[in-house]
Image 1 (cartoon, one colour):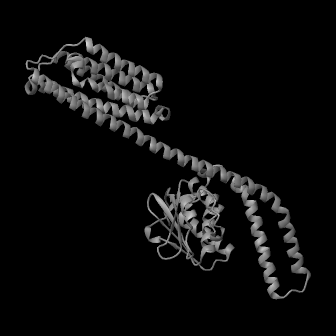
Image 2 (tube, helix red, strand yellow; image 1 turned 30 degrees about the vertical axis):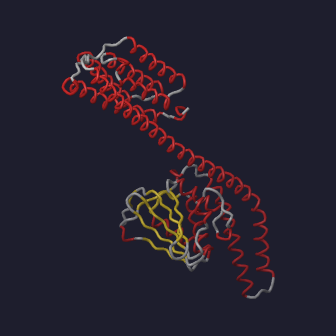
Image 3 (cartoon, one colour; image 1 turned 60 degrees about the horizontal axis):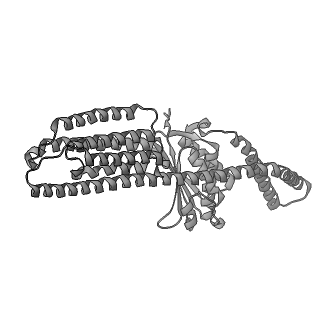
Length: 421
């Protein structure tokens, strides 16, 4: 059943549309009662029909207010509204020819609404009410007085056409509305499933990283001791000493990364991270990355002309995510250009390389699952980057440059302006 997929917001949406449709029908009914005597020379039971319309109008006002202030809604509210509509329509038909009135088939749209929105038991109740109303109108009604049989036949055919068109339009609109709502909901569910899968992958990678940090501590310490012994224990030329110093620096860096894993994991929420000016943050990150990677063929461009830089959440995982993107770009093809710009609501960080561009697989999945194109540098790191960016409320965009290279664009929320002295 479609109704099994309706949440509270969708029930409220249906109720609001029902209230709007009821106001339209009430207006048309008032106009019809006013014009019937003059246009069609028909004398309906004006007073009781107007009383029904006034009662339904009062009910509609109460229903509209109830929907706006009620803390919880459910299928019962929709069933209640449909039952009132059927009873009111049956009352109008009773005073205007009963089952002989071609507009009697307007009892069908409420049943269609029930089929689209209500559970089976409530649908059965609404259907039974519609059938009972039609059955009673076949035996109990106040007939319309028409002097000419030919004109009565013509009016009946015209009424049937109006009823057919109205029913087709109403049912088509209802089915389209509900189908569109379900399509949007299914798309949201698919997005949530993708995010959940990615979160599971990130969690698994975090567990593996914690185990690797524990296991790699001992061999790194052993390598550090061996490097120290080689530096002080033998006659080495300048080139070998330089290589050992570089090795020592890389071992120290690996130790700092492993020790930082524990500190990063202790940050439970992105909101708990420090808030800094975005231009200061990107400068520090770029200098740190450039120093560690010896990347002399990379440049940083900050749009200082835009005024004072806004603040942002400096989450540790975001630092690592941006460094992953810079590593990918540097491996794909230097020189690398890192640029930052901002507006009052967002901060944009763009990383461009001069490599072959993103593979179709990386463009399709955009960090939702690992890429097998390791030679292009877009593997598991892209998953971690996307998770870090979304953790602080941002999003990641990947595209290829029209001339050469790939462009990764990170958009982060801006928190406020920093007034520089």
